[in-house]
Structures are given as C-alpha cells and as structure tokens.
Image (cartoon, rainbow, N blue to C red; front, side, top):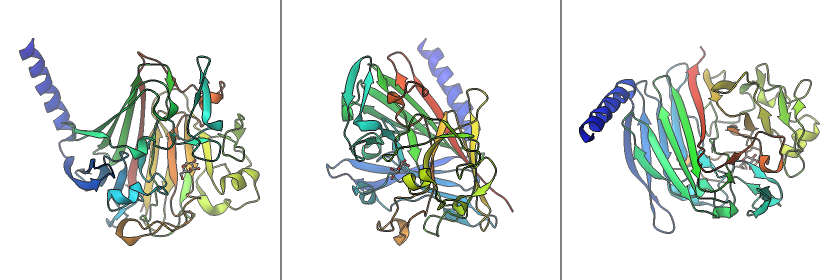
Length: 373
Ligand code: GLA
C-alpha cells in the first residue's frame, strides 16, 4: 500500500511538473506583523516572463508584471513595498484575499437557522469585507505546490468576527503558461455558516501609479445589476442595465458616463456595484474584458461566480505612499471582484452563500493577460 501510494504520488508530481514546469517560484522575507509574525513574499514567474508576487499577509497580490504591445513590462496592480503599508488601518484591501464575506452585510447582522449573528459594523452600520479583521488582515500559511502553484491556508475560528463555524479556507494561486493568474478558492466548515471569498486587486493596465482608469475600455457580460441604497446595500432588485450608464455589454470607456446625473452612480461615487453575470450554466465563463489603448494591454476575467463587483477606486485619495513612491489618486484603478451578491444572507432570493458541514465551497477566477497591437 505504502509503495503503491508513493508511486502514484511520484506520477502525480511528474505529471504536474510537465504541465507547469516553466513556473519558477522563489520566496523572500516581507517583514513582520506588530505581534511579531513573519510575513513572506513568493514570486511566481512563468515561461513568458510574467511575474506575480504574493505575500502571506492577506494573501495579497503585491505586484503583477505583464508586457505591453512593445514588450515593455509594467506592474499593473496597486500595492506596497513591504508589509508595513498593508498594516495601515486606512489601507483599502490592495490585492488582498477577502473573507469570510466579500462586500457588505447590511446592518452588520444576518439570520441563519433561526439564529441572529452579529458582526462588527466597520462601514457605517454595515459589515464590509469580513469585519474588523477580515482575511486580508491575517497571515496565511503557505505551501509551494509541485506544479508551481502557491497554496495559502487560513483557519478561521468558530465565532471569528461573529461568523459561526470553524472555517478552513484554502486558496491556490497559479501563474499559468497561458498568461493567467488563476485563483482557486475552497472552504469547509464544521457548523452552518455563510462564505463569500474574493480577491481585491486594483488594476491599472497603464501600470499602477501611471494615471487614471477612466479611458480603459470595459466590457461586462452582465445585463443586470443590483442597485444599492445609501449604505451600498442591495435593495433586492435586479435591474436591467439597458439604457443606463451601467450598460457595459458592449466595449465602453469607463469614464464616459461615470459623472452622469444618475442616482446609482451618485450613491457609489462612481461605479461600486454588483453586476450579475450572464451565464448559460455553471462553470467558468468570461465576465469582463478590459483594454487600454496606449499600452495595448488586455485583461479578461473568467469565473465560476454568479456576479462581479465593479469598483472604480472611488475611495482612493492619493494619500497612501505606495510601491516605488507612487500615490494612487481618485479612480487610479479598477477592481473586478468576482463574488456572490453583497448581503446575500439577508436576501433569500439571491443565490445562497450558505455552507454546511460536509460541503465544500469551491470557486475559481482567472485574470488572463494579452496585448492588442
Ligand atoms: C469594495 C467596496 C467598496 C470599497 C472597496 C474598498 O469594492 O464595494 O465600496 O469598500 O471595496 O475600499
């Protein structure tokens, strides 16, 4: 038995290595948290020279270098040079893994199996991105996989930030030979709970710190979105985008209508809304495509999730000193956070975010990079 399983393991490793042999991974120190925990940063480089750096604090994508149409590399995500930048309480989730619940839960509470759970109110009266100490503010345990992937594990205790059940979250990053940053999320629980994991990378295809994203051209395969109230909590309505500034079903400049006199745009200070992905079944589907004409960079987003939060960096204000001395002003980046709808635990009509013991939460999202000459 022992012999057989180690032979199988050797084959598995060999098989995986053949597929991803060209992904090189190295690691370095990235600093320490205030309580002395060491933070590491892993560099994944694929055979085409794309490079992703991911740190164990918040599992954050710290940098991502891709070529433009002339082969010039630039770092297209916002971030900091060391863990210290991520420890600033004003840090707006740059590149981080978000959990247990991406986006907002209204009135910082929800009812599950007849019991009311109270969460920290860290965004007005509501809970944002998992509470005061979400998955973006913890150190994940890393493991380098034989296929070049980086696995990050975090075990969130029963009652952590008010959520029920011990939740084991495992996130795997791959930088594939098809120039994709692929993120596989899994989670299990020992009590009924709710979960909604995502990644909060801030993209600027000109290079982070090189201006605004208003001229980026966006396509969103979403013919409906979930309008919000003044606290950015969904009203429950699924509203058609047709005839509104939320219609990105055809390639459209992000800044073209962003300052229109539209109630929803005013509430979001721009785009900060959950778009319902048009899909024909479950599985991976293309939800978004972003193009930037001066560099020719193109980013496509595929996901198994039902929705995507499109956010135009409306809370960026240029005050944080970031990588390489850059600052990031208002609308200097965009986020495409694949997810279940915000506040789903309080909206029985939305796709469920409940997870029960014995079930495995499993989602995948990938960001694919190319150039258009
Ligand atoms: C999400 C939210 C925004 C904002 C950012 C982080 O995109 O929807 O309202 O909180 O995260 O600043």
